[in-house]
Image (cartoon, rainbow, N blue to C red; front, top):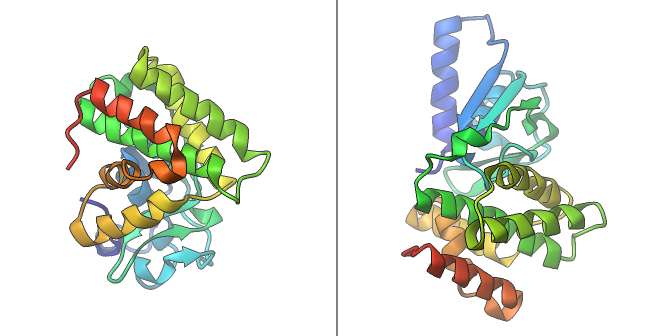
Amino acid sequence: REPKTGDIDAICATIVKRKGDTLPRVVVGIGGGGTMDVAKAVSIMLTNPGSAADYQGWDLVRNTAIPKISVPTLSGTWAEATRTAVLTGPVKKLGINSNYSIYDAILLDPELLKTVPIEQEFYSGMDNFIHCVEASHGSAMNAMGRPFAMQAKSVVEDFFLKEKNYDDYMVASLLGGCSIANSSVGICHALSYGIAFILGYRHGIANSIVFNHLEEYYGENVVKFQQMVEKHNIQMP
C-alpha cells in the first residue's frame, strides 16, 4: 500500500529504541517510489520532533536531515529526483516538500529494472509519462523544465511502443523528476490523489485511471497512452 505518516513514526520509533541517542549516519532507500519516499521521510523525522503528519506541506522542516542515498529499483516515480516525500496522512495525501527531502546521492543501475513485472513497470512508467505531459502543458512550466519533460516523455514512449532501452529509461525517470521540480503537476494528479486516498489505489494506477479520461485536456497524449495500454494488454481497474 501507499506509505502512511504513521509508518514513518513507527519506523523512527524503532530506530530510536535500538540506537538510543546515536543517530544513524546514513539512510538508504532501496526500492520503488514508495520506499524512496519512506527513506526521505525517515531521514527527516530522525532529526525533527513530532509526527510526520506535522510536516505535510511546504517548507515546514526546520532541522537538517540525516544524509540519504537512493537506489531505485523502479523507474518512473521520479522520487529519486525531487524535494517531496509523498505520504498518506490522517486527513490528506500530501508530500513533505522541503529541500531536506532531496537525496544526497543516487545510484542508478538499469540491471535492477529487468525483472520488474510488466504491470508494475507500466504503471511506474506512466507516472513519469503523465508528469511530463502535465508539466509541459501547465502554466508553471519554464525554460529549464521543458527540455527535461520533452526528452523524458519521448524516451517513455519509445520504451513502451518500440524498444526497451533500460539505460535511457532509468535516466528518463530522473529527467522527469527534474522537469516536475521546475514546474507542477496538473489535473490528473489533483484527481488521482483523491482516488488513492479514498479507494487505496497505488499512485501509478490511480494516475492511469484518471488520465485515460482526460483527452479533452491532453489530446493526442491520451491517445498515445491508450496505445501503450493496448500494446501491453494492461487491464486497468
